[in-house]
Amino acid sequence: MNDPHFTGKTALVTGSGAGIGRATAKAFAAKGVRVVVSDISLADAEDTVASIRDGGGEAAAMQCDATDGAAVERLVQATLDRFGSLDFAHNNVGVGTGKSIEDLTEADYRLISDTSLKSVMLGMKYQLPVMRAQGGGAIVNTASMAGISTVQTADIVYAGAKAGVIQMTAHAARTYAPYDIRVNCVAPGLVRTKILSEMFTHEQQMAMADFHLIKRLIEPEEIAAAAIFLCSADAAMITGHCLPVDGGQSAIR
Image 1: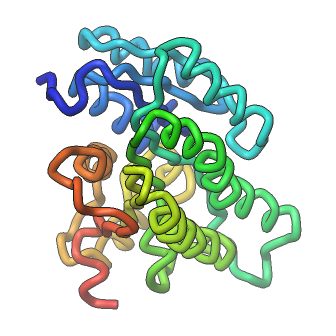
Image 2: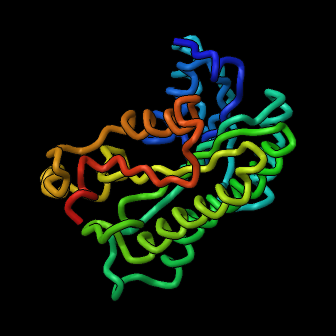
């Protein structure tokens, strides 16, 4: 259903070829938002766009390496060229290895920190000036419960990067509040995604989900719902906040 707060506006969602990003892109489109679906895999982005268009939404696929500043700058400009505005953004790129600290390499460190932290910084670096010039906007970054408490499945670099996302979110919120720009983040627990299924067996996933008070995996659409809420008029007085969507995991840390 179209929502007057969202209809006719534009959202940019990174990492939206699958998982949480795809769910958020589709949720924005269902609200009447024009969506730029960005992913390092153009084919995956196009799959998301096809799904949105099948549902009557408007979207465009754009390939982007979110760890490359020049590429992110081009992505934001391409969003403006295509739709004329940038009202909402969901910076959703991230990766972890699940390795122990003894097994992590310097190459792992660069990959994880660039993908999970640098990508968020670059996204905001180029999104915020556009929103300031327009007179407002809303940004949601994907953090993680690993950035709040110790999580068995997360490697130490991923945990540090996601803690950094939470702090960068708060800092940006404080700096840009005078320009009517709200910046928040979501901290998912264990989400049912393709990446998770590639890293762990079904039995391992169910064992890890037992850390949630609600004993199941979280669906990507449940994270998307939180992101949409943080961009909505109902969240007009919420900024600098990290919203856990973790099945109650944070209650027992």
